Length: 153
View 1 (cartoon, rainbow, N blue to C red):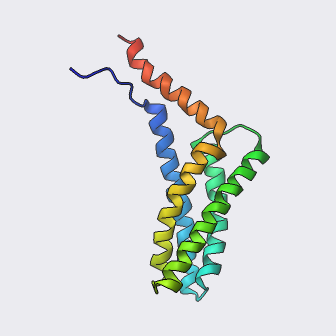
View 2 (tube, rainbow, N blue to C red; view 1 turned 90 degrees about the horizontal axis):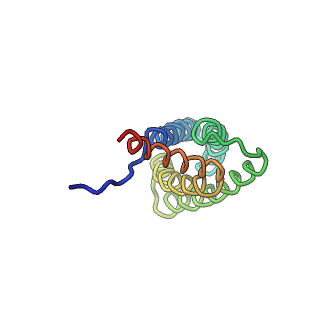
View 3 (spheres, rainbow, N blue to C red; view 1 turned 180 degrees about the vertical axis):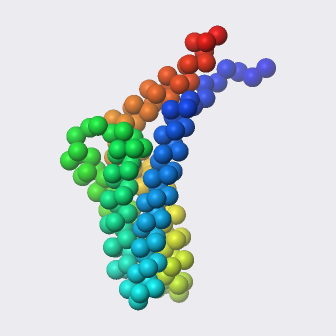
């Protein structure tokens, strides 16, 4: 017999799905722009900077409006988002330069590897710090969804 363990409901899973979709769009736009710039002869640091800024805009609006449904004050959220992305940019810059200049990797696959690491870190910062009011809303929605089957018994 299995213990009655609450599982995430459809609302919680939908939020995770939306975060993944926004992340894929953000990274596809950012990485696509990086590849185009690289093929045009733009250096890895400059290409990464431009693509990072464009990706940040996609990420902020997509995650704030669609993923988290954040309705808190705009400017404090923007500043937290910029802080999280400044940390992400610093890690991306360090990794990219290590891969390209230190290890001799071609810049396109080097940025792909750096993007994977940075995505995991910025996800964590967004979830825990950038959109805190939405996190509480997700927790309440997940609890509510998990309790729905129990109410039907």
